[in-house]
Amino acid sequence: DTEVTQTPKHLVMGMTNKKSLKCEQHMGHRAMYWYKQKAKKPPELMFVYSYEKLSINESVPSRFSPECPNSSLLNLHLHALQPEDSALYLCASSQDRGVAGGTDTQYFGPGTRLTVL
Amino acid sequence: AQSVTQLDSHVSVSEGTPVLLRCNYSSSYSPSLFWYVQHPNKGLQLLLKYTSAATLVKGINGFEAEFKKSETSFHLTKPSAHMSDAAEYFCVVIRYNNNDMRFGAGTRLTVKP
Image (cartoon, each protein chain N blue to C red):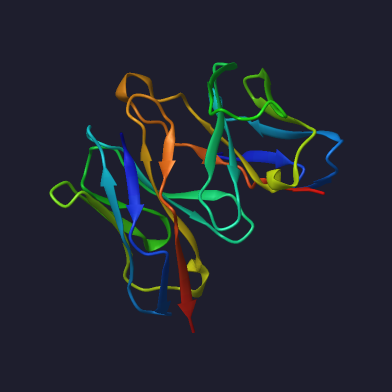
């Protein structure tokens, strides 16, 4: 099973709302990722968690707050977003972060389509 | 630094004809390269990957890619296009010694009946 699930599928929120995106995997992967994808563009890396610790933050604004409560679950908390934050948010996981020169395939979820009004 | 360049933003083929999607890479080290496919309003699905084993890599749905170091290329091919192949295709390189991916700009494949 190589499934990564994401909820909700669609989310519409106002600029003053607080909402959360959820990502789950049960493959025993220890690395999890958040990407943002604008229309007709490739995904852009936002955050990387390795063994439940944040290891990469690609200079993402603080209105996005990631959380990794356990090895299977990854959340992205949203607060005071702007209309330009509207995008497809993709979660991915991999066995590890390919340390020591290795490479671990990333498996993606279907994404959450976020619209900020 | 590692990066990939997808040479065509849009490729259009007729059903049953061959598909060629081109990707060139730049890397100081021996790279790990991937092709992912994204159907409209969907997540990304792994088609195939190269990690310094066989240079000709076979993937799902009849796709394959050949790693050519002398040409710094990793082109994706399929002998016969199917309507269901219409999608966006991304060539990806892994940043050395971690697992962080760098995506090409994508190639949109259109398949005509």
